[in-house]
Every structure is written in structure tokens, then in C-alpha cells.
Length: 541
Image 1 (cartoon, rainbow, N blue to C red):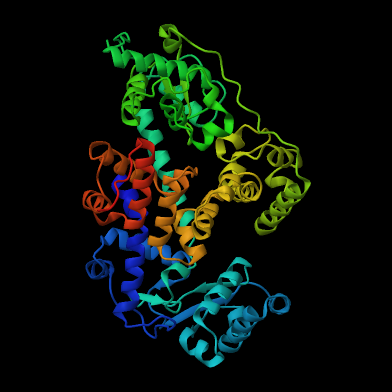
Image 2 (image 1 turned 90 degrees about the horizontal axis):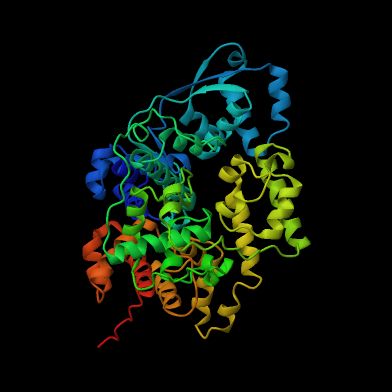
């Protein structure tokens, strides 16, 4: 499954390589269009671009989704039939945009009134040339007509290869929402992780499934699953001194966090990292904060897996899993602290910001043709403006928030909140910093929740330069959210390598990770790893 996920969501570098290859093969310069289909299949493109054919298929599908290419040629006969009356067609034509009206008139002149009663065939290329209509204008109009149930359209039979629909442009200007694309990948990885946790859990598997579907009755046990049917009594393995210390430390932290946070926060508390979330909620005041500061994150990860295997802690079946103690954990714990009272982030509502959220809700409602209250209620919107949730965990704590809102609309509100906070107090440390203004601008965009590649595209600066900006900022006292800038898998690989090669440089890291990641991404991951492991950068000789 890992292999198929990587193939379905290829690396951005591979996507760029394929895009450039497609246009290079036909010798098309930036600003020019193709005049003929590209007659190469996936295997030929794979060989030419030097990437796997399965990744080629995924990238081509992505290009198709955003109207960059289309499988098959433009030649041949298409079939069309109007599915409504002549009067309805005239009424429809009078109320659509001019570019789509031009296409509809061209269709009527090409196929005549006969298409009102039976399917008619016509030459698409000939019609477009005769009426001076671009292919993308025609295809956009046909999608609109089909959606409006005005026509039934069958495009020309595919003649093989790829039709390039847009002029060649710099890759950074492609109309592709890469953050959304890779967010889908992260969501798929989380789903796979849930399946893995279901397979290995020693708790009742029925309850795991009920919890995944957010059912309330997850108590007791079914008595029929493999976990419940296990005849061997649960015996905790005897651990060495360090292992027993970490076991009790984990239970102590889980007691204070009371099932409200995931593995990352638990690890930060144990080690004593002052991550943004730790600072945000004042968790550095917890009794167990920094209790395992003599251990590194890898040792903590092993101890957490051991604790889960021993059934003294459990990880929820949510897409954003949280860690909590089991009854066995409570039974063996020695020194537990009461649940920590998080700092309340509720503030006096800024009416101007609330108005901005109301406007955002109206825009989303118009797009999906819904009433604004269907997306999120007025009460919930006021709570969002007052508490400023920064992630799904915090948003879920607000009542009246639906799963549909979490899945479909929450990212828009997170972006608005991050922008609002970024113009308020979050950047006070940045203002007082003596870093150059260009580095400060990159940091400011990162704090708005932009990914590394979004910053590159927004500033229109070379990725290597932006990476050096962020590297400098990470090495300073400024705090940046690692999760928004680089993927967890990349960071895990880099950190694991640095743990055993503390003086490794970027070139050695590239040799270790291969060409899968770009040097700019590796530079950022290395900076975060050095910061976390407290490794000073050696001066250049």
C-alpha cells in the first residue's frame, strides 16, 4: 500500500520532470502551444523522463484534472444531442456568459435543428477553426452545458497520445493546487495508519471500529474478536531501569493530557520541547514536562510503541489520533498527576474578524449553492472567532461543528485564522529580529500556514534561496511549524540519519536519501533536525 500511495501521489519533482519532458519532446518553447497530439504512451514517457510509468499515469491524471492535457487527439467526429426544447435552448443562451454563448451558437449552426430530436455528428476541429474558438473554451462550455442538462455530448474517439491544452509556461505558474493534492496523500496515509493500528491492537476490535465511526457505545468487549478471544493473560514484560522509567513517565504525561493530544505532543512534553502547541497551551507548566529530557525522540517513540503493545496506553481510531491511558495503565501507574488545565485561548471577539468569517462562509455557500447556516451556524462561527482554533483537534472541541465542515471547509477557515493571527501578535518576535527583511518575509508566509512550495510560488524566488531563508530562521530563536513546511516521512528519514551521523552535511544527506527529494527540501529538514537535536553547525573552513 505504501508503494501504491507513493505512485498515486508522485513527488513534485517527478511531476515537474514529466511536464517539461512532454513539451520538450515536441520542441515547444515557453509561451507557445502544441499543434498536434503527443503520440507517446506511459512507458515511452517513463523512459524519456526517467520516472516510473505508474507515476507517469498519476501525473497525467493530475494534468487532466486541471485542464493541462487530455488523453487522445482532437481529431475525429463528436456526437451531440440537445436534451431540452428549442425554447429552453434560446432562453438558456440568453442567460449565459458571452464565451459560452459563442460556443452554443456555433454548435447550433454546425449541427442544425436536427440535434433537438436525434444525435448528430460534427467535426470538432473544423467547427473550432470556423468560429475561432479555442479548445479549452469549447471544453469548458461543454462541461457547463452538460451540467445544466442542456446537451448530451460524446467527444471524438481518442486517437492515442496526449493533447496539450495549454501553452507552455513555467512550472510554478501551472494552475495546480499542490497543497490540496498532497493533503489528499497525507489523508490516505492516515487511513492506512488506522488500518495498521486496527490490525495490531490488543484491545477489542469491535470497539476500535465503533470508535472510528464515532459511535458513543465503545465500552465493554465483544468477546468474539481476536483480541477478546486471546486466551493468554496479559503479562507486562520486565523492563530495564530506563525502560521502566519511560513507562512510568509516559503514564504520567498521559494522565495530565487526559487523552486530548497525539503522539507528537506527548513526545514534546516528555523531552521538554517548546513547540508552538506547547507554548500555545502553556503545557511547559505541567508537572511532567521535560521528565524524560535525557532521552531522544527515537527512544521515546520505541517506548510509546512498547506501551501500546503492553496495552497500558491506547491510540484512538481517529484520523488525528490521540493517546490515552487504559485501565491496565491506571492500575500499574505509580505517580499520577491530575488533568492539566490548558490555558484558555478565548479572547474578546474582534467584530471585524467575525465579519470576515461571515463573508468567507457566504462565499463558500455560494460556490456550493447552500445556505450559509448549512455550512456552519452563527453560534459556532462566533466560537471560532473567539477561540481561534488552529487545527482539527481544536476545531472539534467546538460544539455544532459537523464532520462535513471539518472535512470540506475547515482548511479555508484555518487559513483565515492564521492570516489574522499573523497580523496580530504572532510576529512580535519577528519584528524585533535582526534578520534581513527578505528572510522575515519568508518566515511571515510560513507562519500563515503556507507550505514551502507555496512560499516559493508566492514570492517567485528560487527554491534554494527560500530554503536558505528558512534554514537561517530555524537556526535562530524564531519558532516555525515543521509540519507545514516539510513532510513527516522526509523529516523522519533525515532525523534518523542525523542521530547516527551528527556532523553530516547536505551532500551526504542527499546521497543517503537519493534523488527522491530536492536539495531545498533536504536543507529545511536538516535545519529542523539540527535544531531539535541541538547540533551546532560547524563553521566553513
